[in-house]
Length: 251
Ligand code: NAP
Image (cartoon, rainbow, N blue to C red; front, side, top):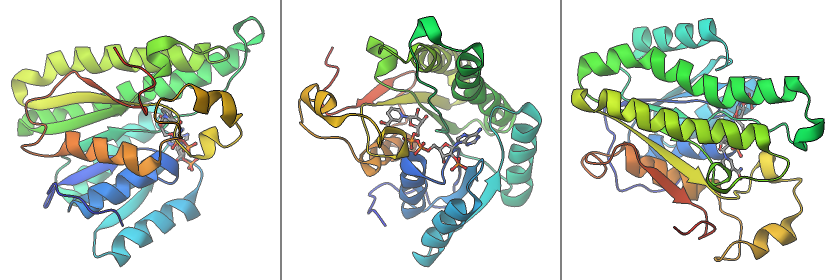
């Protein structure tokens, strides 16, 4: 399990899409920092159970919760269950995401809609569901996983880059709304990270566009997320987009 300098002892974190890839690494990192972690997943119960087992084997506390984050009722029920079980919810990481790539001219409306529904509306639904308890507690951290393609666009990813750009707007508006109640909202924009999502991409052109010359690892995104969750390390940051991209986008 990765080491962490931040302490999230006594806190409860919900990570969406935590059964695999970046979400899995975030769940492990937050647990290593002391948080009790809720491992959300959609369709991989065994993978989610393995993440929970790994956290428990390292002495942490975790449990899994199946929910489609694009489904309003399932999201509401998940957050209700977390609050009933743990009595609090301190950190929400909106990580669940999918791609349905294709050139815009031939993109099926269903592929546009499913990506917007999960990658953008899902973030809205989860954020709204946790907002009442966080605003009441006058503390909380919400961390949204966007992407560098939200910043520069990408052929074949009109749906995905639109959703991820939407997540940045959503992050900033929510940050402005929640700031007076001590709840921060930030985004992390990964570049190309080794995961199931990128395993079939042609690597050579990608590597040529990355100044650090390699794909990122899920743990490297998890480190940034853990920092944004940490107190007091990131207490004075809100509405920001932290890029973890090997230098792909320098502005
Ligand atoms: P991944 O390996 O494909 O994992 C996706 C995760 O999302 C899985 O845990 C999956 O759960 C979950 N998920 C899918 N549909 C869901 C739904 N309807 N409700 C709840 N969970 C759902 O992807 P990843 O590469 O780790 O990506 C994680 C996040 O980082 C995504 O938001 C992605 O857009 C973003 N990102 C990735 C990269 C990259 O290079 N990999 C770059 C920039 C941004 P199941 O296992 O149950 O299906």
